[in-house]
Image 1 (cartoon, rainbow, N blue to C red):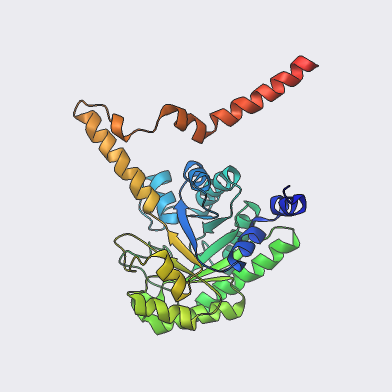
Image 2: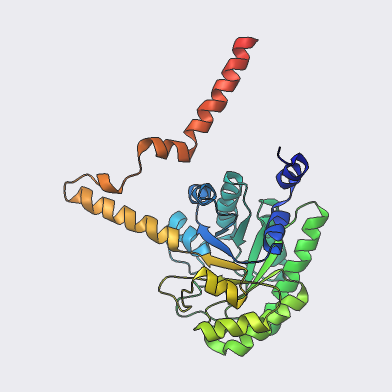
Length: 306
């Protein structure tokens, strides 16, 4: 028989508590990243225990625009509400720079908590920010970066007082222009302020990744971008180094875009892209038609009994 007490606790746990419990188990969590409710739903259907709303991918999917600070807080929050409503697994939300000063950071973190995110990621780039694996990014000075995380941590505590629990994922992009030592110093400062998860973006080789894991305390995230600056180590290698989360921010977007491109090319040449398509019955099931019809029948049955 199932442990009903454990099932009840898992069902009623806040998103933050679910994520905290997952990371507390130790080991590495492989985290495909989503960009809309359907991609998040498919990640959950595949059995992954968490996901991340990628700012790069959301900007591409929602605006058809690059991740260069064009998408707004309101647009990201709206996308996030749809994503968190579609799944029961914890969702980490890309909150960019917090969309302004320390008070904007607090508003952003509280908004993400209310939207059902398990964590919010705040970074130290100059606004407008850029994808961490593209050129032209700059960071604010260290004191300003620390102020952002202090505001985020304060907002986390204020949200908890309202029953809204989420974690703070603190990111630094200082490796690009200021070197690894500065990036590590910032991450250490973020940890001292109470950030829950630390993320040093774009280390260049396994030795740098090992240094990050050795010198930065707590839970650490690796960001694996195909064609990016960080080597694509295997999950066992990442776990051995000491990472807790392996994020794949663009893998699903890239796969979807390639499938779209190939299907369109086939149609443009007068062919039907049959070999690229999901069976219609599976398509309906994954979108939720089968569950909808089952629930519809349940209520229709109740009317008949009445």
